[in-house]
Amino acid sequence: MKTTCLIIIAMIAATLIPQSPAHAEKPNVLFLIADDLNTALSGFGHKQCKTPNLDRLAQRGVKFQNMHCQYPVCGASRASIMSGLYPYSNLTLGNEGTLRGSMPNVVTLSQTFRNNGYYAGRVSKIYHMGIPFEIIDGTAESDDPFSWDTAINIKAPEQNAPGELTNWSPKDKGSQSFTGVIASSGDSEHADGMAADRAIEMLNQVKDKPFFLAVGFVRPHVPLVAPKKYFDQYDREAMEAPEVPENDLDDVPGIIRNYKRNSTTYGVTPELHKGLLQAYYASVSYMDAQVGRVLDALEEKGLADNTIVVFTSDHGYLLGHHHKYQKQHLFEEATRVPFIISVPWLKDQHGRSTTKITELVDLYPTLAELASLPAPDTLQGTSLKPLLVDTESSSWKKDQAFTISRSGGESIRTMDYRFTQWGFGENGSELYDLKKDPGEFTNQANSPEYAAVVKMLRAQLIAKRDAAGFKQNQAAIVGKPGKGKQKK
Image (cartoon, rainbow, N blue to C red):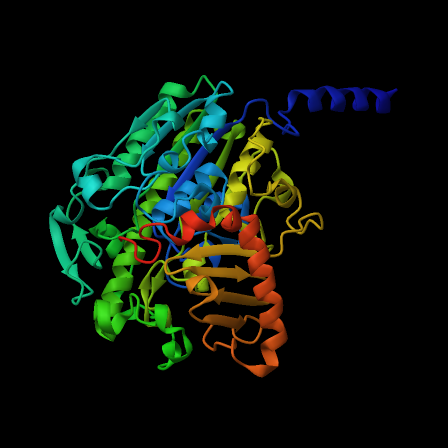
C-alpha cells in the first residue's frame, strides 16, 4: 500500500514539473548574424578572442565546426542565406543589385514565416548594406521589403565617434581600411548597442505572437569601433598573428595572388598587426556583449523556452592569413563561419558540436522544418535537424561544401581536401591536402602524385556547380557585370 501511494505521488509530481516538449507549436525564431566574423570565438577554440555570451549560447545549443558560406562577400552570402539558394541560382553574385532584383518572385526565409502567420521583423543589417556609410546615413538600400512587417535601420557615427582613431593598414586610405576607434562613449552610442536596444524593444512588442526576428550586428566589419572597455580586455603587445610561410603565395594562381595582398594593399607591419588584431577582437567582444543583452531579454520576457536562436556570420575573414586580409578569397579562413543553433526542446545535444560538413544554404530548410512550415520546393540546402538530434548522425550525407567568389573562383571542400579553380577552370587551380596541410600552404594541384585526386575533385566540382545553377544560368553568370571585379 505504502509503495502504491509513493508511485501515485511521484506520478502526480511529474505532471506538475514542466517538461520539455518533443517539439514546439509555432516556435519563435531569433536570427542573429554578425558581419565579417571568422571563427575567432573562444567557444570555437580561439586562444585570445573573448566571447562569453556566444559561448553561453553554444552551451544551450549545437556548434557547427565545419560550416561554410556560399560566397565570401556580404551581399551574395546574405542573399544565399535568405533565399536558400546557391548564388549561381539566385544570381546575386556580389554586393551590387538585390536578391529580388535578380529573382522577383523569390520567397525568402522570413517571408515563409510571414506567410504562415508569423510577425517578421528586421533590425539593422540582414541583406547587404554599405558599411560604414549606410550606418552613418541610417539607410538600407538593398533591403527586401517583402521579407518584413517591420524594418529598423540604425544610424550611428562609426569612424566619426569620439575617441582614439588609428588606421592600422596605412597603405589603404579607403572606407574599408582597418581603422580602429577606441571610443570614449558607451555601448548604446554605437551601431551594435543600438541594434540590441531596438531588438529588445521589438521583443516587448511581439512577445505575445509568434515571431521571426532578425538582428544584424555590423561588427567586426571595419571600421573597428568599440568602447574603450572592450579594448582594455586585450593586451596589444600580446596579440598573436597567424604564422604564414614567407613564400606562401608563390604557388597560388596569378589571377588571385595579389588581390588584397598585404604588401601591395594594406602595408600592415608586424607591430601594426598587433593593434589591428586588438581592434578586431575588441569589436568582436563588443558585438558579443550585445548578443548577450538580447539573449538576457529573451529569458526575462519568458520567451527562451519557445524560441529557436541562430547565430552566425555572413562569411569568414582573413587577418593576415596567407599574407592577405578581408574576404573574397577561397581559403578556409574566408569560407568557414561560426554557427550555433539553440533549439530549446532538443536538449540532449546541447553543449555538443559537430564537425560534419554543412553550408549556410542549409539554414532555410532547417528553420522551416523545425517550425513545421511548408517551404518552397526549390530550396537547395538540406535541413540540419538530423545533426541537432544527433551531432554524429549517420543520416547526414552531405560531404562537400561549395563556395564561389570573384574572378570565376569556385571551391569544393571535402573532409580531406580543398580543390579550387579560377576563371571557371581556365585560370589555374589549387589543391590542399587538409590532413597533411591543414593551413592550406602547399598547392598540390600540379603534383603528379595528386593527379587522380585533382581529376576526381574537378569532376565533383563541375557536377556540384551545375546542380547549384551554373549550367542553367551560365550565360548570365559568365557575363555578369562585376563577376570578375566587384566593389568592396
